Image (tube, rainbow, N blue to C red; front, side):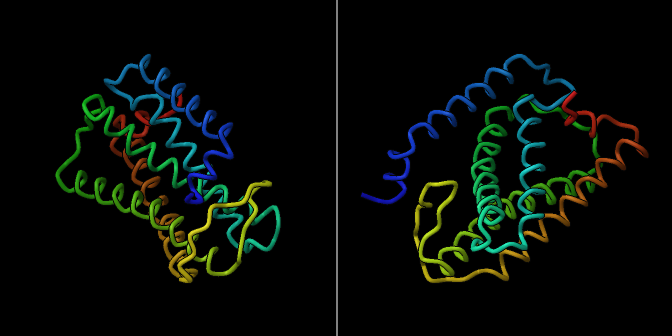
Length: 196
């Protein structure tokens, strides 16, 4: 039996909790006004992604052998990968209900490019980290559970660091652009993703 199937079967509580979380996000999203703001589930995932990215970044100097810090780093990285899949699904689900910001052509191209690069980093950084982890150690316990293992004997440590730093830099550009819209252009771009 493949390890991922065995892992899911051994951790049914975790799978059930993930399903409850998805249901809650769906129900919260049904109640929100989509005309000027993003749907609440997308807002929640946006800020949760930021929190997990910061946790992963600040625990990133600790290799998996460092115990709890290593586990926190790996858990936050794996969570970011799972959240990306959920984000893409929600973006598709709400595709006709997203706020339509009045952007110039170059602003639209820049915003879309940064967003796609952020998504690409969110996808590739955990993958590179996972292959680095599996190349460096024989097994890894994540909060008392064995992490499913698919070792390809490829260490992508440098790629993992470059992708993570690129994600942080792109996030900074993203944040500065949002502040520019709020302070200089005085439009609703920043407010559209506000949790309030």
